[in-house]
Length: 333
Image (cartoon, rainbow, N blue to C red; front, side):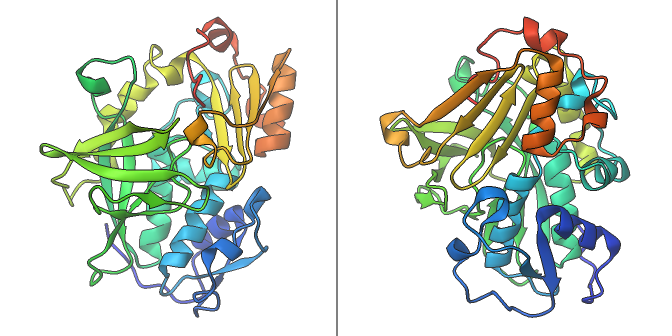
């Protein structure tokens, strides 16, 4: 991807994006030497407001703050597949920007990670698109028996930096901060307590995380990364996700994550998980409050109050497929 130079008078795209994240821009490393763990209270984390991001030379700490704010403030959601305003997802960046920045909606991996890629590349970071297969516990071939439907990013702070970072804000509950990549077999623990590692599997790499005391696969991809890949190359991924028979087509899902809390609406069920959802993972138990929402209007009200999705965005929301779907669809979210 191209990486245009940018002065502090940042373009409207960057300004509106950082505002959406609850962040602000600076041209110096005013918080670069501050531990990221002390400045991350976006939307319920323990953080300060108006955190400055160095838009001319972002640091790793800046990247951490951006991903954490992204997961807290821009929900993972598929409402467009169920009649919400705007309809089906698209790979058109103008439409994605309108949806996420102007209309204050969320999206799924192809939308969330691609718009983040635009932000990071505009700020001078080197970004690559990578397709991945999502693990299915009930699938064949170790759960990876289907086409790639996911997009994540590999990011370097600049063209001369040899260190890459795995970045993903479009997976419902990814690691809250970037992971060093490839760092094979190294256990990496992010601020919310999630333990992750990259494991070689022949010519592929598998991302695992520790769940219930067991290392569990999440994603798999080819270790040979095609650096020329663009968003348009993910048309087949988009087609797979838009299939009415996949999880996205069967039931609505909306999710946001902070260090301590995870908020989820799956169909008509609203669930709050935390705090300590990761630190308690070895026991397979985390505090959960669940509420069955009795009507479409109650669902829409929760979407507005907890996820910032305006009522006008969900006037035409169709809950029929969600209510008919099996309980196991999105059961782990």
